[in-house]
Image (cartoon, rainbow, N blue to C red):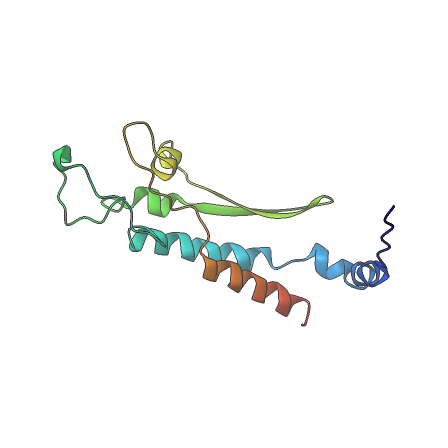
Length: 135
């Protein structure tokens, strides 16, 4: 038999001492940071890996960056925040009917993922939260 005892008193103490800060995470700052990053995904035609190019038969002018000819999708992306008893979230969405198809791809079209966080975003969010807790 193996018995493992874990002292979580420090964790409990952290939650008790930081209840207000936990309920008031900097969600709008995180949202703005991620919205900029999503826009950078468009401007780079994909990050960290460049999106697959257009099909040769598309007839579209090659000098338009992928997904940027009208900027309708680019400009339609928005976020909202939810604070609740179960936690807080930042939600992102496109204001178009076709955004998911472009992001995830279809049987006949490659995915061009733009609604994604980069490694540097995760680090920046961790830094924001760390500053929020005064660490």
